Length: 305
Image 1 (cartoon, rainbow, N blue to C red):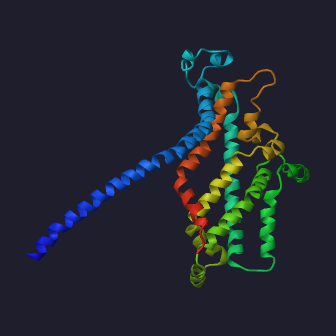
Image 2 (cartoon, one colour):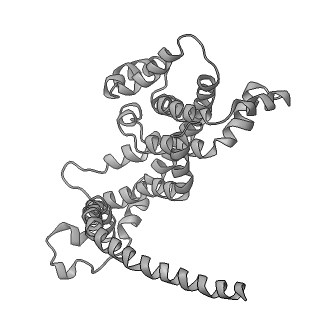
Image 3 (cartoon, rainbow, N blue to C red):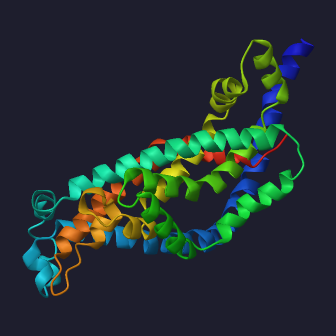
């Protein structure tokens, strides 16, 4: 009898507590709403400022060439949209060749960066030796030099050894350019993995390279993805070294080839906007595919246990 009474009173007490909490939550949400708007509205405006040039680029690439040549009333802005600029781009230019060059160079540079950064990051993470701190300082110091001061010595050296207008030369430059930051990223991720994992792998017969690429790298996959995405985007969008070291048309990258579409007396803005849109697609797709792993990798690299 006593049990029945307590079971009927407990739900009533719980309901009364919930009823007492609801107005407090409603008051809290109402009080927070104006403060949230102070953050949401500037964020939305900033996002619109960032996205608007991209949307205008895509829209311009879809407009007919006659509409870009003169003033068009606002009522006719959306008439005649199509892919004529893209047809002129791929039928009348060698833009497909530029894309192939960029894909080969960016992918090869990314793979080289991951391999070298994994080895260097593992060594700096697992071993303590003299001048380790000085070595880290030198690696980070190379990032402080502007690339423009390196152009002349790199061009002179490559002209002597015959690496101008070659895949190998620009891949070496891009690997050296992305390697310092990649080493620091891999170093941070490898520090989060306990050393007992290395010792267990060595007991099973793994060599040092086996421990790195069969054990540590798979365990650091979010961090490796972050390194890969960072290196690929940096090399895909690089222009300064490419425009100096790649002057022949058959080895030009997308960015260099796109710059060549600006004429001295006239410019086909539809073709340029179509080329810019196509050039932006690989990085957007790559970021969309690995977005979750990229965020997880950034968070993992910032925590040390």
